[in-house]
Amino acid sequence: MSLDDRLREILRRSEPLMHVMRTARDLSLPDWMIFSGAIYQRVLNVQTGRDLDYGIKDYDLAYFDADTSYEAEDRVIRGVAEAFEPPLKDMVEVRNQARVHLWFEPKFGEPYAPLTHSAEAVDRFVSPLFAVAARLEPDDSLTLIAPFGLDDLFALRLRPNPRRQTNGFERTAANLLARWPEVRVER
Image (cartoon, rainbow, N blue to C red; front, side, top):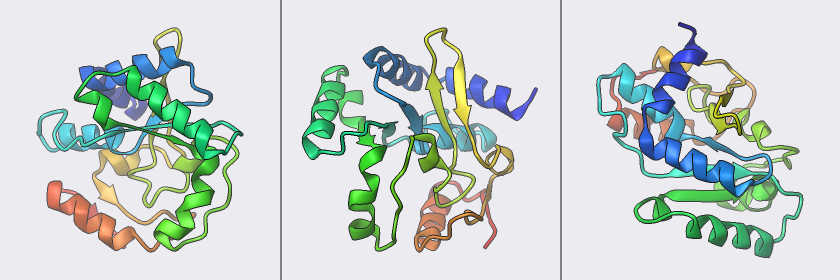
């Protein structure tokens, strides 16, 4: 079985994740995807023998809308929140990727050029291990976005993004190792 197929199988086994993806699909947000921990942490859990949903704190729901106004994003955030009941209502975090460049540098102290679509954000993540996203299509197929491939994720290998060095790698590595000490860090 290919790594893509293994990832799809793991993701489909999580009912909370699939509920979030079905709901996001039904909301018809432009260029949407789920990324970050909601995706990669489930693979770490399977690879290390933990419960599938161990450590899942949120569901990062990205979308891309050229309207970069705070008001437009806030409308989407409120609309998404109304589509869920607790606990998911408080766990789904929605962000317009067209707006990231407006707040990233003040928050993280690093420049961040504007994005042109949601998948471009995945290419800028701290590590290839994290650089994975998924979207549930109208025909129920899962589209995966993994610009670095899935080898690092399934090998439990954390290394810096070779295309974009960030200040946050060491902090991120320490945080990840606290929950999954089996991960091998390569600096």
